Length: 201
Image 1 (tube, one colour):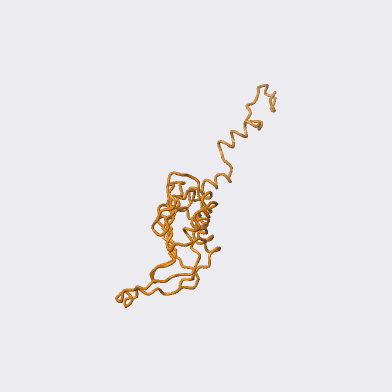
Image 2 (cartoon, rainbow, N blue to C red):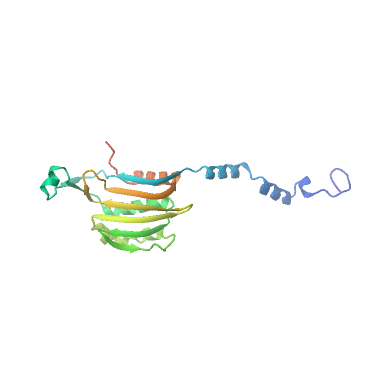
């Protein structure tokens, strides 16, 4: 019997059955779902970013052996920081920013880690980074490639230099490809919070 005494069985959408609610939810997502979809579709992406910074540490001038180089200011600077700790913190910052795969580590020109085919192993590599501690700690230059594989493949190419030209920086990061603005800010905020960086003059 129907609510209105018509004698006909009313369809479920008239009296609010669970089937009705499932149909309504599927046909008309609630406002929260709509707002999430809208936010995703309007997510801002940043492309081909270059991040450079120095540590707020003691340093010394390494004079060039070339007289002409010294005259035109091509001396180098050697900075007093723990290159292994710097590499580890940068990797942790990338992991927080959803980078998944560490594909390469090069120490003073020698490749000590090369696994471009491995997926989702960045956190595992960080857990096992002590395996590379001796090699990295005694080096002058460390290069690292990490991969973010979401909407499209994006590669962070990190170069950490203890000795560099006066006009260069200790840390150079080139994020090749597109990254969400929110992921970029997560990385930068982590680095700013964990590292004692030199303020730009």
